[in-house]
Image 1 (tube, rainbow, N blue to C red):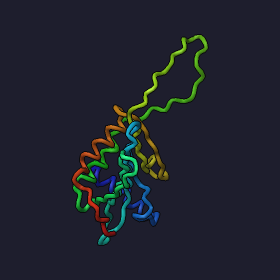
Image 2 (image 1 turned 135 degrees about the vertical axis):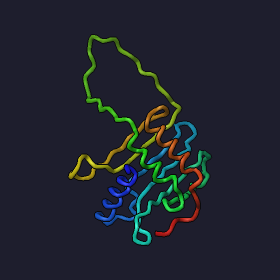
Image 3 (image 1 turned 90 degrees about the horizontal axis):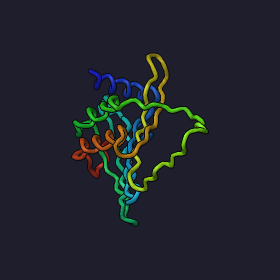
Length: 171
């Protein structure tokens, strides 16, 4: 039921805004490796096919090998049954606690943070609603390995692994 509600909210918002698959703005997620320079970004939007909403995902992969061409692959919710359940799990990401800026305690010992030069930057950008009858909002979450953001991106890419193809889906 929750999956249907998510799809209905996004489809209604897309119809109301007049947006289409060229806008690539409703959901995106990415991973950029710190040391190897390899990265990918998936952008998701909806279009209408035969009068019904369909999700289309575009993945652009930048190989870690310098000078290697980027690769673009595509998937859609008609041919990839894993897409909607994977996107629905966005709601399961643990809440992020906002830490307001504070001044350090001048009496506290100075801690030198460790610096990590490896790892990866994971990002999720999505639209959402604040509450019933309120306008849409946007959120950008970032994290390194072992964060809810990284876990969601990695699990979603595993779920969609067999869905990607070189042919752009028709609208």
